Amino acid sequence: MNAGILGMGRYLPEKVLTNFDLEKMMDTSDEWIRTMTGIEERRIASDDCHSSDMAYEAAKAALKDAEINAEDIDLILVATVTPDQPFPTVACMLQEKLGAKKAAAMDVSAACAGFMYAMITASQFIATGAYRHVLIVGVEKLSSVTNWNDRNTAVLFGDGAGAAVIGPVSEGRGILSFELGADGTGGPHLYQNEDHIVMNGREVFKFAVRQMGESSLNVIEKAGLTLDDIDFLVPHQANIRIMEASRERLKLPVEKMAKTVHKYGNTSSASIPIAMVDAYEAGKIKDDDVLVLVGFGGGLTWGAIALRWGK
Ligand code: UT7
Image (cartoon, rainbow, N blue to C red; front, side, top):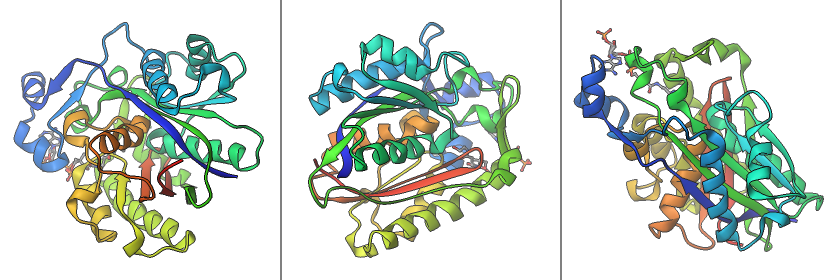
């Protein structure tokens, strides 16, 4: 059974925090943030809006797009590092909100690579025939763990959610190959202490440029494809300079890469599904296009998927 995407959805909080707003909060500038990261603004969830609330909105949209009911879901996987609380999981809260009575539920913790981990895990249940519909969500309320006194990290992150229903698709479509990886020795470069995100930006940057390029090329080769076969790249939306390096490795023109980093910042595990929905709605992805999805994050973790779009 080929596993692929049956439907997708996303949710972004309404409140916009621009670089100019940040200029008033800390010693930074729109010029520095735009040049160094490509970010112009990001969304911030209100105090009473938690990861489970954003996940619910994105999930509802994905179910509608997939034309299935909540009762049809066999398993819910939520990728997040900012759950409402340690337990119950966001996945269990989402199961209750949706009324997905039949679904098993758990969270997946792999930082910004979380959506890649969730998607690959989901696809195994589909490929074996064990389940027919797995709802996966990437959701983060990073504003709740941002240190607003640390300009090195505070300017980078945003809140949001993206969801997909994974299920069986026709021959030749869906996930063609994947790669998941982790390097725990790099853990000290990006982590959360008791309250906040702490990052060695330079080290993460170097790792990201190297790993995003290598993983993308690996999944292309594993799928028996060449660079000429690739139609579209969906990289984790962390920093435009990292994204551009990946795009150049795949020799793709600018318009063949999903880009939302300028308007939503880095939404960690939510960034890939949000960027995919954005590109799809803009008509940049069509049936039978071959996509490369690639992400990296704290852990350190990484993941990439080659996918032929369509049901
Ligand atoms: O999902 C994974 C999450 N993490 C990432 O993707 C992060 C990857 N890393 C990066 O994107 C980059 O490392 C950053 C954009 C975070 C920083 O770029 P950099 O080229 O590594 O700069 P840097 O940290 O070495 O800082 C250069 C200068 C420093 O000043 P001095 O020491 O040269 O005087 C910083 O203090 O820029 C200064 N700086 C800032 N200036 C204005 C750092 N942050 C800011 C800021 N505004 N927000």
